[in-house]
Each structure stands twice: as structure tokens, then as C-alpha cells.
Image (cartoon, rainbow, N blue to C red):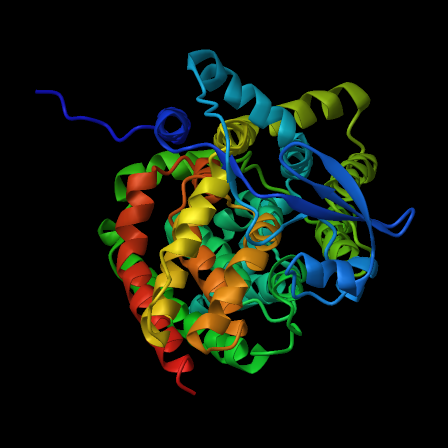
Length: 496
């Protein structure tokens, strides 16, 4: 009998989309009323089930709607998306999604995710250009020799650096750019591709999970909960250090096993296939000043991207433009003629086309949820489930609820504005601080993000053609350890 093969990322996501489509026939449709701020005329827009009205942008308006958020959080732009209004859930006429809604969802998802898809494709073109110069191979060879015998430094450096980006400005989607760049470095250091993915993806995940000053996570969630984002910051910082330490120990131990015996690698059967993905023209390259300058421009693109996101409020359009301009500059430096540049750029972009499609299909799942009007229903039942719980159970249950909700709402900022006005007041009823709910939101989303197929893990694995089953085999011991550790921390924090 032929052995069954684990389905591809695209198939997994289509199966999930199909199951979510079926859920729209089972879960009642419903919606909360929402409140948005209009900076142009300093008013609130309340969107009800049947009517829309403008209200004065005052603290009294917020109090009348039972929203415990300071007015300045809206007026200064901290909360820039419409929030759900507590106690306004209404069940609506069912809007089940049919077969044609299901087959259209990947297309709608690709359209909605066009910004990040173009970022991925342009990055692919940039990598194709820098690879064609030979500068990247020469640089990797130099780095591998420099780290010989001390390869674990690479694991620590990359993981901590990416985690720093995650905890400060939500470094997540941008990490897609680093997989095709850094995986060859890890392979040259005699690790496998799993180690490279773990350092980049887990570094980002732990960083965003334990966000300290991340405006797209802890700050917007705290604002929506009506508390200062500094409340509980030291606890989150300690949690960041603890989770990073646990993860680094796990990755380094696995990496050491692979170095000592390559057959211990979870992806050993794909060793040649993965190596071929990053195998370029190995002709002897004179690593002259021209190629050094090209490599410098390549690295500078990422420095500029990070600076722009952190300090200049850049987003996908600006980031994509940076990589496009960078690839053109490298082409000029390396004296690549116009026709070769276009051909090489297109080939590089096509290498990441599969990754881009996975991102779009995953977004299609949330499209089905929104069109079927079941997202708010799930939130309503989740908030009702915690009534009457004691402190410790409440904290753990809230963490689990946020983990479950993140399957349907993978956006951290979207989750914050939709759920915090509903969930945070529940902390008052059990006698704990609202920062516990903010922590539950972060930790629950972060933990499930490690294995969430509607997040970025499938797209990340697709860069190196590794199956989801291989990732689960690698991550599950660490995942279980972090879940147990987090729930213990959450329970204890309720009584401090």
C-alpha cells in the first residue's frame, strides 16, 4: 500500500477554508455595534445593526457606551480602528457561505493581502539579483569560516536580534525576507534548515508574544482595555527573558545533535533537496570592492526597512519600494545589463510565488469568517464562558480562549480592538487587574502562533519546502513546555 503523504501548505489551508465555510452553516451569525473616531471633524461614528449615527467625541459619550477608555487614546491616534462596543451583541439572520464563496475566498484573500504579497515577490527579485553577482555566496563562505567551532553564536545572535524586533515593533511579516537569506548561512554552519527557521520564526514569535513596547500589540491592547501600556511591563519583560532562554536552550541542543550526526535531523530525508534550493553558481568569485559594495547595499536595505518601520511609520508600500530600489542599485553596481536584470529579477520573484499564494489563501480563511458573520459570535460565546471562574482558572481560560480566537483572527491589532473592550471588563468581575487580560491576549496568540496554519508558519516553511508535519515534530516538545510554563506564570500572577 502506498504511504500517504502529508498534504502541502496550500492544501491544508484550503481544507481549513472548507471547514470554516461549513462552520458558517452551524455557528449563528451575529455582530457587535462598533465605534470609530473621525479625526477630520472630531466625532465618533457609531455603526449599529440597522443604523449609523455620529456622536460627539467626548469622554461622556464613551462612558454612556460603557467603554472604559480615555478619550485621548482615540484623539492621539493610539486607537485607529473601530472597536466593538460592550453589551451590544446582536444575533443576525444567518449568512452561510456556499461553494462559490469557498472557491472565491483564495482570490479575495490574495487581493486583501496584495501588500505583503508584493513585498515577498520584490524581495524574491532582490535575492535573485544579489545571488547572480556571487557576492552572497562569498559572504556566506567568509561567515562560516569565521564562526567555525562557535556556530551556536549564530543561533543566539539571530534569535535575540529578531526577538528584539518582535518585542519593540512587532517584527513578524517582515521576517519572510530573512529566510532565503539566512537559511544558507545556517546550512554552511552544518545545521539544518529547521534550525534556521526556528531562530527566525521563534525569535519573532517569542518577541511579539512578550511584547514590551510593541505599538501593534501591547500598546493598542492596553489602550483598548483602558489601562496604561506600562502596567505589567516588567512582568512581560521577565517573561520575554524566560521564554527566550527556554527556546534558545531547545534550539541549541537540537542544532548540536544535527551537527554531531546529520541523520538526527528531522529533515534529513530532504537534505539534498534543501541544499539544492540554495545552491548557486559556485564558480570562483573574486570578492572585490564592487561585490562588497553590492553586499553592503543589500544589507542596508534591511537596515533602512527596520528604521523606517520603527521611526518613520513605514508599512508595506515603503518597505517594498526600498527593496525594489535596492535591487536596481545592486544591478548598476554589478554592471548587470538591462535584459539580464529583468530575467534574473523575475526568476527570483517566481521562487517565492508559492509563498505569496500561501499568504493569500490564509487570508481567504478570515474573509469567509467575516462574510459569514461568525467572528463576533465566537467572541460573544468566548466572553460568556469565563463567568463565575476564580482568578487562576480565569487567567488560564482567557489565555486558551485567545489562542483559539487567534486561529480565526490572526492579526494582533485586529484582535486587540475587537476583543479588548469586551474581554477586559471581565477582569473587574473576578477582582484582578486588566493587564492580566492583556497578557492573556499576548501569550495566547503568541503560543498558538507557533503552530497556527492561518498565521505565517506555512508561508515560512514554504520558503524551504518543508512540510507542516516536520515542523510539528520539531516544535511540539518546546510548545508544550512553553504552554505549561505560561499557564503557571499566569495563574501565579493573579495572586501577586
